[in-house]
Amino acid sequence: MKRIISAAMTPFTDDGKLDLDSAARLYEFGISAGLDGFFFPGTMGEWATMTQSERAELAKAACDIIGKRARVLLSISDLGLASILENADRFSSFSHDAYVIVLPSGPGAPADPVACLHKIADNVDRPIYVYYVPGANNIRLTTAQFADLMAHPNIAGLKNSAGEIRTRKELLVLKRTLPFELYEGEEWAIDEALMLGCDGAIAGFGSVGARLMTSLVAQFEAGDVAAAMESQRTLIDIYHRVFRPAVRWWCAGQKYALNYLGIIASDRCRLDGQQGLPEEERADIRKCIDQYREQITGS
Image 1 (cartoon, helix red, strand yellow):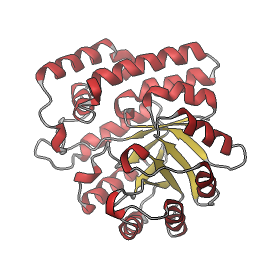
Image 2 (cartoon, one colour; image 1 turned 90 degrees about the horizontal axis):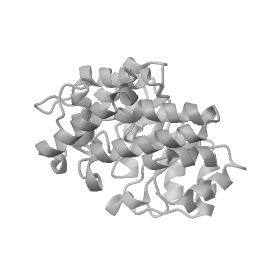
Image 3 (tube, helix red, strand yellow; image 1 turned 45 degrees about the horizontal axis):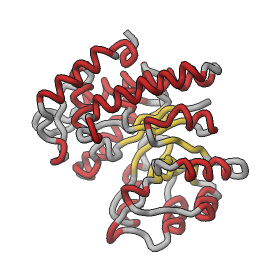
């Protein structure tokens, strides 16, 4: 079975506090759309703006709300190895399925990324998924390093957001001999990733685009590749119109769309660069949602 996992957004109230009521509606919307899991809180979830206690509060609430209806993956990413392991310890009592880790860049970047990830996997109480995003942390792995990494028994898989066909192909070759899950991280490439043999996608646009993504998977598994490709083209159109040109409003645009759909109560973002979404941008997002409402909501 191919899976779609949403890198979920974090709803806030107008005054910037966690909005767990809106979070519950967001999770229910995703479950009703057929999502197989949720990932909290990543970049799309504005984790860098949250305190440790807020991250724990959100993670606990998500586990309680979702239960066993979908997989729950919790991010333990942080600025260094010690704080990463502390995050895992903090979440250990929650009823989640696995951890997700993206290695830090800058002063906290490990000298040996594979050895660091092995040490994390050795010292946590759940399987881990590695979020490979070299464009963000500037950590690039060779094929030999991927093989060493995925041979660890507590590393379950990888989200590939390299945006490169060669990286995906190298990982797919490794899957012939190593038992790990490979998820596409780019929304615009889900159809081809499935066709090549990936296990699904972990996608930041899953909060709005969940139903289209799960429909795409169902069409692919039914052998209707043409329909899957058409769903992919529709998804790309919605993605660009919600995130706006050059993905300028990647957080604010999706939150405004969710607010317009009545799923979250406020489109408040904490990130400084996502403040002040202009009215002309909002107007086109409304047009997009109205045009594709049936594909987004199922009604």
